Image (cartoon, rainbow, N blue to C red; front, side, top):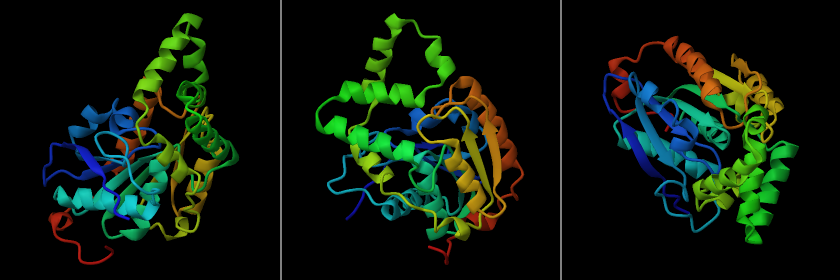
Amino acid sequence: MNTDVNTDMNIGVNAERPALLLAHGAGGSIAGNFGLVLDDLARDYTLIGPHYPGAGDSPVAAEPLELDELADQLVATAVAAGQESFAVLGESLGSAVAVRVATRHPARVRALVLTAGFPVADPVLALAAQLIKSLAAAGRWEDVARLACVSCLSRADLAELAPSDLDALVERTLDGMPPGMVDHFDLVSRVDVRADLAKVAAPTLVVAPMGDRLVLPDSSYRLAAGIAGAELIELPGAAHILNAVDRATWLRHVRAFLGALPAVSAMANSPVTSGN
């Protein structure tokens, strides 16, 4: 199967700036997951933002998605943009994609940032994925949107909403769901990168939103425990989708982590001959 990945974002490609390859979550997008920090990161990094099949402008896949193919296609997108090495920032499902990128293409990966990630679907995520697929099969898309709101937003953000605003929130969520959402969550239910973790050699930052009700913080702990030398940061009260305040905290930690990496040499933009 050939899984096409669409690139809607290739911000400020510059051979002198290190590259960040962005891997979004299931039912998400580059703007939906990273939109609050794209302008900030683009000041110092070249951003490569592919979309999975059925997200952004990418067509829906004809066959079930496979993690290896997504990982390979994301790497191919970065290389086609002239970036031979990069850090990978993965959110939710994108964290599993990032881990697989690091094990299939180790010579290219300078670092990983894994946010709200999981090595395998925990019981809450597995049940949510099954429920999303069942509701979608029954055409109950508004209920899928309601589940997304309950699962992905913080308690504090939901508590501030007036009852009259709930329908509008559901409608906005419904409008933002990509055509490939069911395919994405089908992959979520099959992902298993537990055996990959010990093979990850790249410096890794794991960010655990402690108020996440879709992917339990325990999943982030498992990622950090399985990757040698991984750094773990907890975001108290943060939900699966980070609000502006929590994303600002995330950005501060991520910038500090990326800033401590060895400088990219001229060789980083030379063709990589191993670890492809």
